[in-house]
Amino acid sequence: LYEVAESMDPSYVNARAFRIMFLRANEYDSKASAEQMIKFFDLKHQLFGVDKLVKDITMQDLDEDDIACLKTGHIQLAGRDRSGRKIFVVFGGLVEESSKTLQSSLRVIYFVVMRALQQSVETQIRGTVSVWYTLGDLRSKTNGKGWFENFMAGRALPQKKAAIHLCMDDMRQFVLTNLMVKVMKSKLRARLRQHFGSLTECRYQLSTYGILPQSLPLNDDGGLNLDRHLQWVHCCAMEDTFGCSISPTEGLLDSSPSARPIIPQQMDVLFTGGKSTSHEGNKSLHLLVQGYSVLYDSGTDETKRQVVSTIVDEIHRRGGRFLKNQGERSSEVVCWKEVPSGEVRQKVMQTFRNRRRQLSRQKVSSTKGPLIEGEPLPNDVIFGRAQRTPGSELLHRLIKEHFEEYESLGRGMKMRLVGCIMQTITDQGGRFLQPSASEDGRWLEVPKDNVRERI
Picture 1 (cartoon, rainbow, N blue to C red):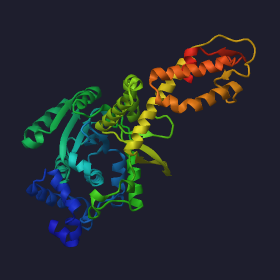
Picture 2 (picture 1 turned 90 degrees about the horizontal axis):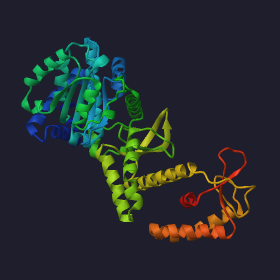
Picture 3 (picture 1 turned 180 degrees about the horizontal axis):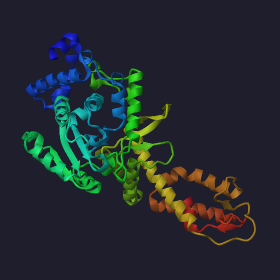
Picture 4 (picture 1 turned 90 degrees about the vertical axis):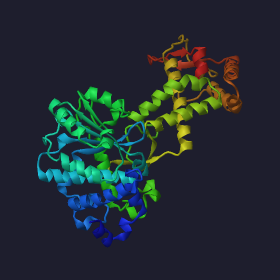
């Protein structure tokens, strides 16, 4: 079938980007790569027929049963591990025991794996991590049927298998799998690990191999979470419909990231234009900012740069990226793009400033000053009101005049300058006030420490 494919389209078979996938998968062993390429065309012919031998498989090549199988989440992309390797999660319990379903399952596995490899040279180089999950309701229902076909398909696809993890809670299945592992070749056996126990136990064991619990598309109760997977399926459909797919003849190294949708992964940091987000990557960023806040706030400019670099490197080490919304929408899917490194540093620094402001507001709101008699005077500075009094105008003018001087000073001198501004206000007969929280029209005098923080 290799010769048939070469006679049909030599440019496809001999394309450098296509052939190098097999070399990378076999650590540049030319003989093993050639043998795998022959198996690859045999598998492709078996699954899709001779007409598709020299064509990249798209969603248009999948029939209704294949699409239904794909949308079940039988196989999903689940971000990257701590070493930056792409994670595939396979749920055996979502495949029914029938030859038709097995064929659709194999076609879907082919589509997902090849899609990931063709879209990322990094995935080809670093390799992939497979997690076969068969716990609870997601336990395999095929009684071992199709295991050999899946194994042969895995050997034919040009993926560098960095690790394979088998998670299960059935002792009988564990024993049978253990026997099969013993007859495998030593090279494959060294990369395979079995994990037996509950969801929590398996998550803990996987975490020791760099697979974070939040990377798995599972809810806390062990139920399947399809949100990210269905978004990925939708983006694949968009990509294929509008002709943005990447063929081996185009060259994967030259493919433009902007030509295809970016799917946010679990550890990515999402900048949403000021909107709050509970994304896992954002939580990680805020925890890092919280941990380094004391060092950052009290450090020199060089120290601050080093702290920001450390945080950015740590997010990348966890397999995360920094993404922002492009401001375009297609259907219900938000279009994302990667943030340039210089802008990333600015956004991390802004996160530190936002946290400092938030703490300052909390401190101010938690401290009540004494009530004053009567209404505010013209020279009083009013906090918490949109309209400005002459006193507030004076404060803003003083801040504007001394802004550049303030930025050039050290922390101690900055506090002295703020004190001078406060003294100027009080010398004019002004006070620092804010409305009473009881909304009874009365006013509170803001304590000096809180005034200093606000200025």
